[in-house]
Length: 124
Image 1 (tube, helix red, strand yellow):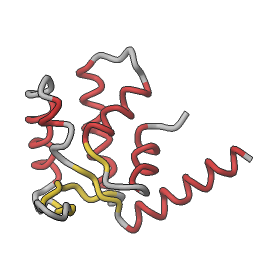
Image 2: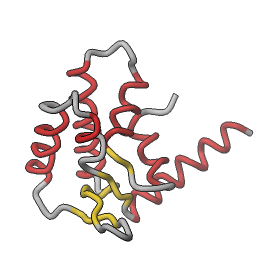
Image 3: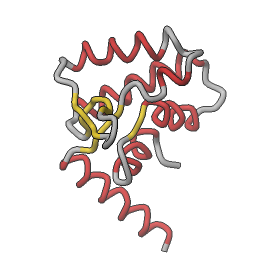
């Protein structure tokens, strides 16, 4: 079974990855985990992917043509912003699921392509 980190990298090859999807990948790893554990692991997963420079953290803007806009805040501050929305307002899924997005970097794409190739090789 792939980890939430691997699934996030693979999804990054298709499109930007929203907070809701990362939460779902973490939850799939352990469906019986307490919500607080899922939230903590989701935040840790985001932190590690961004600090490893595999993804850029940001949000989407533009009314007619949606585009990714990277945040220029330090990672600790960004994680705090996410925590404040994701944990405090968890019941408002329409708010937190699309609050932030991850955009695959060139380095992240290389690693994701290698994961994809490894997965394809294991199928054949």
